[in-house]
Length: 187
Image 1 (tube, rainbow, N blue to C red):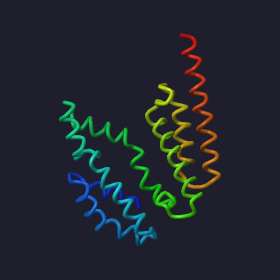
Image 2: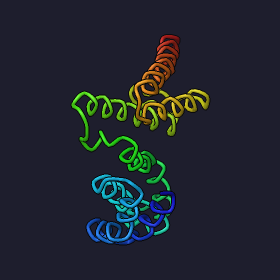
Image 3: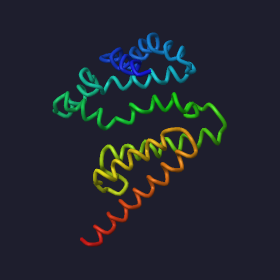
Image 4: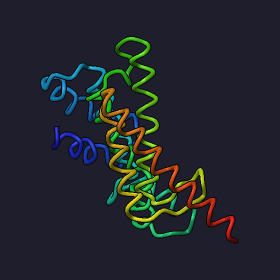
């Protein structure tokens, strides 16, 4: 499974989304199905990576379009797009390990996996950007590492990992909130 995302990114570079998906579906999806994934999981996996190829340097066609509008350097825009869209590189793996995200399973299981995955992705974004947008607060390296770690526990399917990830993430976010509140009260 480690070569297939790279193959999907390379095969999809420079193409519109539909053409990128068709090529990746023809090449990579059968290999994923042979590895034991359902057709829906494998096609969503390659679809996401085919779409992400639009922001992945060196081709990054969407970044070139955005750079021309902004008057910026295309490679810088491409790397910034990858940095901001880093969670999109994790979502396809979530489809593989948690088929409940694709509406497979009981309603309670589907809801719990979707909620924990959303919270995990938001916490991962906070940690990777080192900025909690909800509080408008920059964070240090240690809280960022903590948020990244606890977000991974939320992204991994399982009740125990979800509870540990949620408790740890909420604890770190509470500390960030209290620190932000204390700082704003002193000003």
